[in-house]
Length: 552
Image (tube, rainbow, N blue to C red):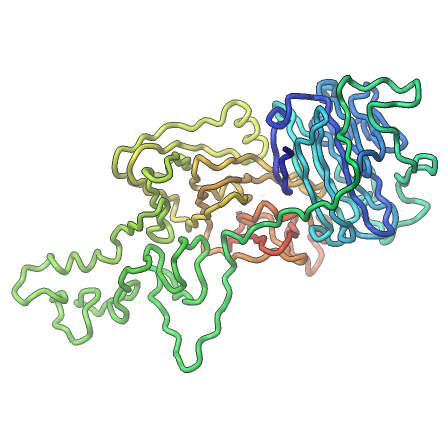
């Protein structure tokens, strides 16, 4: 049974199939539009350093025939044969792309897919629809990439500039600014000649003698008729909800709850980012349903008491005597207990419990899995807890050093409670239930060992160094994100832009596009934002981004 991928999903080819002789089929169509589907063979720097590995209608195969374009067959608009064990060592990525030939936008396409077939059986399918795109005219559908072993990734990243932007991304020589596409000066069209419009013969049954015979047993699955493709699975309800203001009820004055210690008053209608499941708006960090509210007014939580009056004492009580302690009782008993009451440990029976905005408690006896935390983040623990070093391995260290996404982790296991914090940063537990989130390694404090994580690349020719990188977490579990200050959670819309140095996290189903509205050479011009890199986020309803009031 084929595995259904969503945008951003990745897997080793060896986990999908034992074969290396693969069939890649692409289905994409829209009324009145013509598409050119190609494959770029890229080097270790993800550049097209050898144009013989640009596979399209006019160059249907690579020199050693490890990549071959087969044409339309078996219900696919275009198809390829890829023999991974014959790909030269200098080729590290095979990127399959679709470009609109002429006017149009990717938002007009119907349900489509890119799929992988091995041994006559479909093993992977990444489905997409036009609702995932807006004004793009070119899109990278999926990649084979070499990362110690060959892997496959569902990309779904578009380019508004069409072919020009696609060529720039792969190192092509294109003028930086063109106000309008010149029909005569544009890059050569990829539209096939009239004689190539007919469907190519079925793979495995060549009709021309010069064509070499395919490998034995390799053939795409036969489909009696094209079937309506199901709509791709949309991103589930976001784990983190954006704060939404609520109008006050008529006739009732809104009551402002006490503020967290040392923080300005919070609006009771705005839930905190990273709020523990079940916590209602208005509760303070560390307070849970059923727990009594701290006393308000003079001496309340976060409010200074009058001189000589113990916290929590009502106005008018004799100074120097704690409430509830008879006169004549020794000082320090009830008064000390009342003074420390607001800072008691909050034990809710859940695996992850915020004690306040800067301290997180994790119960290791629950869930049966260990916790991976940043080294040095443990401030206290109770019970029988074992701490061990979690190494990333040689490959992980190389990738971490090259991308800046290296994490020095410790493994916490056993039975007990571990308290985590780092430099007073605000902590937010985010629970994943089969979905995913992208977080910079710098903003990760701890996470459940059951989560899968890897470095994800954000491509772009206008980024200094060629790319940005982030950590992608996928699966079921909790990841604790740290921020400088209280962040804001925004829903993703086609007009959502953010500074790359202030973005903390975003849902992995979101599409990240580099904004071409900011040019490096315009930094000195009046009215410029001063930001060298801006990111544009797109995605279906339910996707979100998290931005902190601080630039790294």
